[in-house]
Length: 116
Image 1 (cartoon, rainbow, N blue to C red):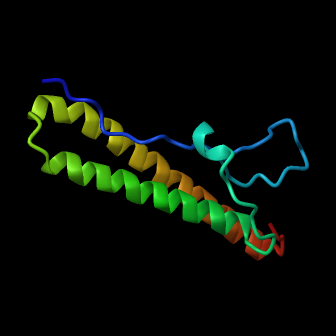
Image 2 (cartoon, one colour):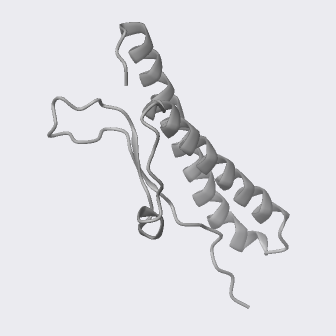
């Protein structure tokens, strides 16, 4: 019996977009998976881009945590679970760090009177 890794398409998340763009906002941005890129609806201009990034990161973290719980509850032998759990835990830590960085960026912008 073969077991495939529990995973879903991962959006790429860039905290330092456009290093060659000195006038860039420095805010995190999310690149959608190729399958979802064309289906994206136009965004409302009144939505705070940092808040939207944080929301998307939190949703992705929720999905990863759900995958971890499902894997832990599965009857897969421990030696097969461990590598998958390590990978998912690593994703969760990275997402938490990105959420924290985006929240800190939002705080700096709010204190400095800079609008995103």
